[in-house]
Image 1 (cartoon, each protein chain N blue to C red):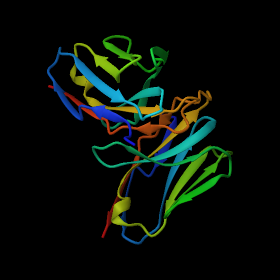
Image 2 (image 1 turned 30 degrees about the horizontal axis):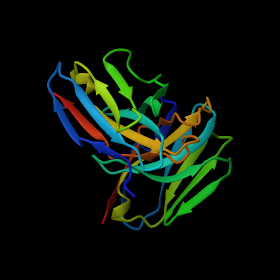
Image 3 (image 1 turned 120 degrees about the horizontal axis):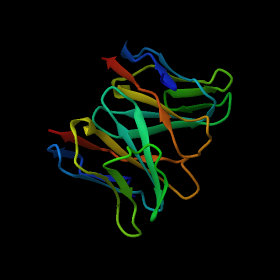
Length: 113
Length: 114
């Protein structure tokens, strides 16, 4: 089974709508990263969360970490076509290796103008 | 300040050939990580290297795959005798001394085995 589950797998929204993507771990999280990937391109770092309850924002994107639930959510407010892409969560799970990240399969976001 | 540079961006190899993927870390970064993204799967850790040292290769297939990060020059991921199942996107990331927090990924090399 997948150690990091992302939901939904894909999402289509109308421009201007809000949306949330979830990332749930089956093990203890020691750091949670959110990345965005355009199809066929590399990963763009969005945010890193380390402490339970931590919340970070960048422009219209907010990420939260619920340590007890072993879950993180990524919320986009007033979505724009530029937000379209694949959102990946990655985490240092269980071992606290400080370098080895486990990734979810990604959430494909489409924003219709 | 150039980011993590990977080349080539696309690589086509026939079954049985060798594939060499290169990664130049960001300036000042001495730690390199390789990940593989197979179709319909998430990114999977392969190997973690520092200059002239392999720190963790627990994600590397036991055969045909090798990685190095020499004192001078880029890190190289080498796949010998490629098979169709090796077709994937291979991503390199780098970080400054002290650990991963601060990972920066390259744009990846897309390997297609025909």
